[in-house]
Each structure stands twice: as C-alpha cells, then as structure tokens.
Image (cartoon, rainbow, N blue to C red; front, side, top):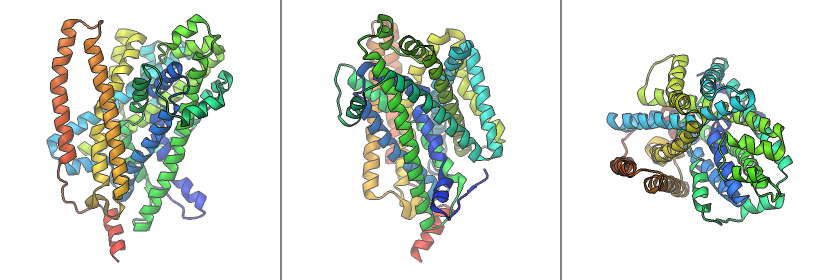
Length: 481
C-alpha cells in the first residue's frame, strides 16, 4: 500500500491528510442492517429512542479510537497483533470467527443492494446479489490509483445516502422539538422499547470494523516519534468524531422519517399495517404510500449507496483479516476476489432458493451472528491497547482503560442479551416444532460453553513479552532521551 503523505503546514491541510479512515469506518454505522433497525425503531417509538443512537455512537467513537491508536502506535493492525500474541489453534479460531463476522456483516449489505436494484430497475433479487459483488470488485479496483481515490468514492456514496434521507425527512415534516427531546431525554416506554433499544445498540459496533480501522490508519506516513504519534492519534480522533457525527445525523434522519410517517393520525390502514413490520423491501412501499413514488426512488438510491459502500469496506476488512491472521502472500485482486466470493455465497444461495422473504430472514440471522462475534475482536483490542509492552507510552491511561472496558463489557452484555433472548424466543415460539426446540437447545448449550471458554481465555491470558514495533521503539527511545 502506497503511504499517504501528511503535510505539516498549514494546519487545515495537515488535518485533511488524515481524513479518510474514519469515513470508511463510519459506513458500517449506515449499512442496510442499521437502516432497517432505525426505520423499525422510529415506527414503533417515534423519536423516543434517538438518545440510544446518540449514546451508541458515542460508545462507538471511544472503541474505534482505541483501534486507530493501536495501528498508529505500533504500525500493525489488530489481526497481526492477534497472530503474534496467541497460539496457532486460537489464531485459527479467531480467524474463522472474523471471516464469519465479515460474511454476516456482508449479508444485509448485499441483500440491501439487491433490493435497491429491484426497486429501481425490477432486477430479480438473486441477479442483484451477483451485481452487488461485481460492483464491489470494480470499486475496490480503485485501490490501484491509491487509497485516497477509494476514500473519496466512499465519501460521495455516504453524502448521497445522507442527501436522500434528509430530503425525505424534510417532506415527512417531523417535529424539531420532538427530535431534540428524543435525543436528550431518555425514555423506554412500551413493551418493546427495551428490546428495540438493545437491537439499536447491538447493530452499531461491528467486529470487522475494529480490524479495519486499525489497518486503515497505517496508510498515513507519520513521524515515528512520541510527538508524531500523539499528534496523529489526536488527528484521527478528530476525523473519526466528524465522520461518526455525520453518521449520527443520518441515523437521526432515518429514525425521524419513519417516526413521523407512522405516528401521523391521517395515515391509511395499509400504511399503518406496514409500520408494524418494516423490512428493507417493504420500506419502499411504505414511503410510496405516504409521500409518493419519488420518495421510494430516493430511498432505493440511498439503499444502493449504503449497500455498495458497506460491501466495499467489508471486503476491505476481509482482506486485512486474511493477511493478518494467515500471512498469505496473495495479489490484492485475488485476495479481494476470494473474500468477495466467500462473503457473497450465503446471500446468493438463500436468494435463489427463497427469494426476498428468505433474504429478509437472513438479515435477522446475520445480526445474531454479529452479536455473537463482537467479543472476539473487542476483548483483544482492549487488552492490546492497555498493554505497555505493545503500546509503550501510548497505552490507554487508567481512566481511558476503565471507561473502555466498561463500555466494552456493556456492549458485550447487550449483544449477549440480544442473542440469548432471540434464541430463547425461537425455542419457546409456538411456530417452532417441539423437535426443533429440542434440537436448538441441544446445539445451543455446548456452543455457549465453547463460547464462554474462549472468551474467558482471551480475557485472562497472560500477555506475551514483546520487543515492540519500530514505531513503538523509536517513540520510547525519544521519551527516555
């Protein structure tokens, strides 16, 4: 990867050199899975859960900044640190889990792109899935012209997504006062409020994002000194904050659109029925009935932008994961093709067999998998960034460590609660046969035991002694001198 030069002066030009990684990472907070969760939260609770979105993205900024600091301070990304720290058997487990996380994150993105193409051009869903994979490879081809070109295209897609939903929000006419109240006055009213709030939080932090952010920041050429690393970390924090603030505003717009439309007392019975169960596909019909055909087209464009930008970053994360854990020496195009084929296969098979209904169900399964996967990226990240052996003078302070671990434990707890309640709900559901309930219970128990064992190992394992990276050694020498 060709390094991006950082100009020292003027100050705005220096900061502009760091802009990019945070915006690529912010795409995961605007993917089709988040879009669907936001629309349902707004339909069910109007603006009352906007404070959850604010809290969730504040959590995300804290965690993502740890990932960026790891890459800046050590010159290695999270997957490379895992390979160096853990024995081979554990590394293979973490690699498989990370690849599954990429596939799970990719499912809503590919399906969302396929739905968008179906809404806009009546393309069959399974063909849309294939086109989503092809378009992703074309976008990733921009890497040949430098990471900045790819960052620019992703930035344009994010802006297109935001413009579409802000335009629809203006016509939906939500109350500005209600939006502000929802942001800053915590409420959990109604029987589904707690579960919907947990779903919102669980959909925010993605496991593959933690691997991706630590790798993207290495694309900048920064001074390998104490002050240089501190300055770069500060600039990446500002850049990530701006990117996630934009993601927050777009999430607010999405929630506000469905919140305003579904709370309107004059909506038709058909629209009211659609508000009870919003999917990526049915959302277009909801907007068309409420605002007109133009709004469904804008929604489809935003869904296309969301799906394509998310699949690019997901595939990008996949190639870093493969390179870091396995140290494979592959051509970039071959690694991209391999990652893309692995990620797209489940979506393609389900869409061919079950069509749009199967694709919608696959998104729910993907969210459960991501909830299951998060701790296996988050725990190593928090341990590594709190390690003096790895981070030297750039390790987390005591306060930051406490806050990071607290937020990490909260995120893990929220995701595990979401996962367990979903499994229990399926076991006890009247629609599930007795044999199916027994089989689910029998399979779930040993899986949870293995899950708890690996998580305990990662949390309590004693750290290997390390000689550190060139960046770390040079900054440490400067500190001593």
